View 1: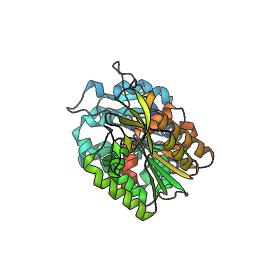
View 2: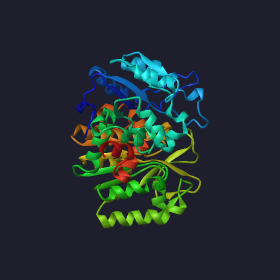
View 3: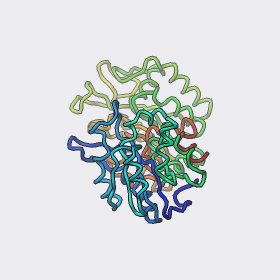
View 4: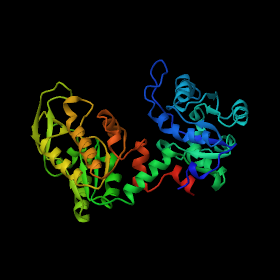
Length: 397
């Protein structure tokens, strides 16, 4: 894998695709700088190697061209602070002024271009737009894993305008690709995948892909009730995709045929209302009374899942076990997170991916106790489902 450590940046302009799609409050202040912090080591290393840096990113989903609330000018001070260098700003990404600023950069200087998505050509993967962007740099660095599954101009199309020895991955991309590859192609057994979330339909492809690789698949979250109903259980008013019952049966049969242990919860924390202060009790998951809904896994399932996790050598976690945003229904997700941390301490390799799983790991301050926390939810899932991504192929050729 070609990373920034392989290239000479002395007196070169590095055009880096970063993922600075960060949340802003009403005062346009950055409320979560995780993505900027993640990219900082790549930027700092190139500056230390005698290069200059041009940063390009998107922010939000602007519909009608330039919009103040989606301007990257709002994040300039945060980026400057986190990389320890004064960041210049171009209020367009391909106008005359932007090119003049990137051409005038001296080693050690950093320029941030305005939001790429102010041009519809970015998301359309427009070749001419990508070629214009390429004029900003001598070397192209893709460090935006969170957008690597999009065949956009700045993530996949642009790479063709750089020679093979003038394009590479930044540290974020390299870490993501290496970690996913370790789980998908080099997993030490037993390999356990924990898949949660609301809908089976969102996770069909990942479950099917994992059946060829994992020894155990643990199901949690709202999607579990579709499986339970498919097996003839009574689920009250729990979330269920009735049009996916046959699919759930197929997945259960496929797992059996492949010798994969597909675990469905056996008990649940149920409530009479979708609220933190609802009346709650425990129930067998296939015997939930009318008017009640399952909102978390319960004692027996937590015990079983924790034991499977602690006996694993490779762990992939995508999706919560319940409505962990509410304190009454967070215990299942918390206990799974703690079990993963314990397994990691015992020598397992653990990869956490997907917004809710990452949020849970951070909520319980366990990020430093797992092997790798992925920055790209959709990109991680698609990488597992497809075996590669447009942004990765563009660099690897």
